[in-house]
Length: 340
Ligand SMILES: [Zn+2]
Ligand SMILES: [Zn+2]
Image (cartoon, rainbow, N blue to C red; front, side):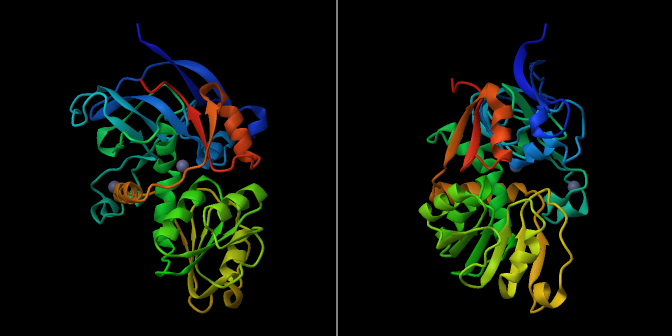
């Protein structure tokens, strides 16, 4: 008989008030070839989980377990796996697999692989007591930090780090962050370490206070004009209406990177007002493993201050409801299992 575990599944994608998530009993998954079984301690809550629960991201299979920022320990191996010993502390992130053979994979752009799969979308994720993941795609994590401070690094941190590189902020430059959730609060700290001056633009007054506390030069409403022109900006809020606002705030030659996987429609742009003078608008699509390793090396040198809001494992739907209502300042984390 299979061992059973507790897990959350997206049963009926729809508005979060309609409780699209269900707390269920599932068999503990079996690691397939090249995969490891991981006992989950903590899984951070990402806005993408909310997009999946609400159906903004079309489900790729019914009843998926969401969650792609899971920290735990290796508890079993599938055929051919074994590089990571049982008990190794690891993180499971969004990028679950790539083909390794297509033109994108071969040129180091595996985030664009057409055959890539994603944790908590194509396969069950970390809102569960156990998760399986390809051994080559999990990150070995340090022992000296609590799991709830490591989990947010796995998507919020890594994606923000890639978004910052896509925004091509010049050294000592002026950066605008539109929206200030989990990812932005980590990205701010990377930018400050690089010597940037950072302006945060977000509708949540509590998030603005946190931004200033963490070292932002200014914090104002999302649609406000920043106090100086920006060399680069990152749009974290999933709000297409902010694209023209952020483009208009750029200095000549500036770049706006859109960090989210989902964005509401972008209004019509005016060429002269929004794009001329060589302003650039670009997207950010997932991340490569190289981004992940580079970010984890960065935080090993400069550990970020991580503001977490903890939820018990059986409160995942509450965590997503709070996230939808802007009631989470920092990162929501699900305390899944003990760290035994
Ligand atoms: Zn994410
Ligand atoms: Zn590929």
